[in-house]
Length: 249
Image (cartoon, rainbow, N blue to C red; front, side, top):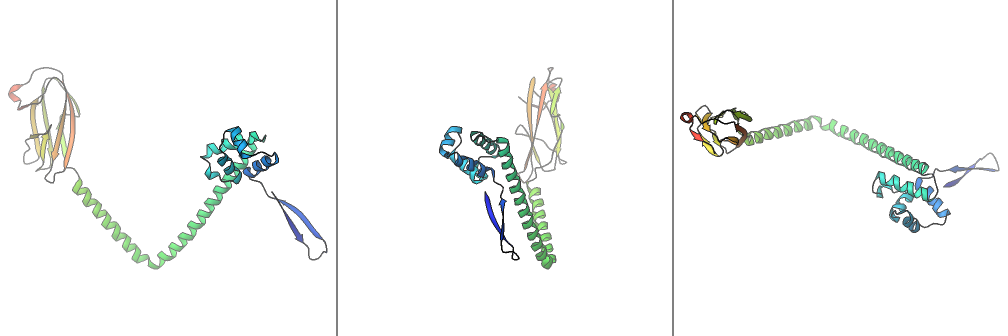
């Protein structure tokens, strides 16, 4: 695209002229060659298998209407080859346009950010002390509320001494023991276990040969619940019946 500029020299009776060449966009170049070849977008779209709307977006520089960067480059390459243009050169023009556009957007955003910061700084300078106090108060209230919610919803403490998470025992007798906060109830596979005043629980029991899965639950006075699981494998042997208080099947 060319524009003609007239330069006037007031000290001379004649006029001097010169041509200023404005760089074409990738889309403008493609459109110019297409029109010069007397080709329609409908015909080209059918030939190269690209929607007419996408070709129109390329010619108008509306790249945001394309389905993505990868597709945009491939569409431009196909369009350029069809018009017997250098696809690498046209794609390079397109990529330069995109880079310049991104730079302009970043610059505009930076300018806006600086103006916004300057305005906020001026406003904050007037009301700094009051605003700071308000922020501290709000943060304090939010922190206190979060701590209160966390404390109220926090599950009760449950510490298991025995068995280990994955435990193998030689025989069929096992001891389940641990500690909770005083006043907390403890259940083994949903059956209650005795807990002393200090929160310590201990019970010896027999288990079937093979693998068993135990669930130990602790429920405090507020109804909050903690659970832990233990997998135990019994490798055989006999139950020491005189020491067993419960049999888990």
